[in-house]
Length: 241
Figure 1: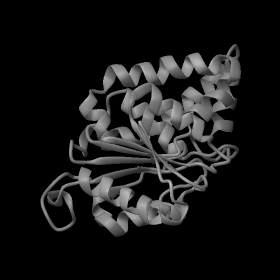
Figure 2 (figure 1 turned 120 degrees about the vertical axis):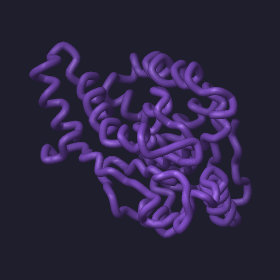
Figure 3 (figure 1 turned 90 degrees about the horizontal axis):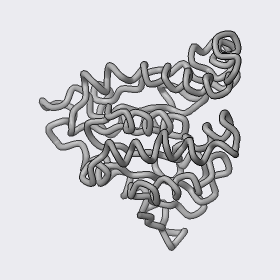
Figure 4 (figure 1 turned 30 degrees about the vertical axis):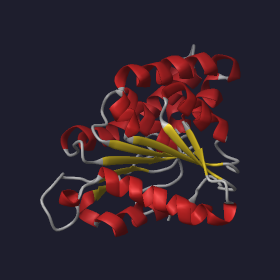
């Protein structure tokens, strides 16, 4: 379901409270620095042109301690060929290996490469008391990890860009059915109602990069809660951090 914040002047306080209470509710005190608990409390999946050390990553370190927060470098970008999983590099490989459908193959290749960067953490160093936080492109990667059954604990999705990426690489005409089959149907098959309650989507109403309609459709199709931030932009740093 959707939850809006009706008073813009109060939205920053409310969303910061939502953000911190969700994370603290997912990660018990036994997992906080200085005590025995999960090997990692939070796995942060960064955005398209970002990486370790960004503002959200630093905020999570401040909250949970550096030893409890992991942020693998996904080697991801749109146009940088020096990044191993960049779209342009994946497209170049796909033109050679999958010339009949290079765009779709490129998206799949980039997603799989980014998932590979996180799978050792997801499968070996996280448990039910851990949380995955995915921002934008990282939110798309987190959704795929959820659909694959690799997320054991909670999941916070910040303006997830899965739908935007599919439309870009598959085309508008084919995107809707592909998103339903590759994501919504798989999430509903993979996640119990209890697991869905441990997931949260946060999206700003003024996001001009990833349309909020994508998160509304995700919430409607799966029942994962969506918190809408009035006037919130794509990065949401002012509202969340």
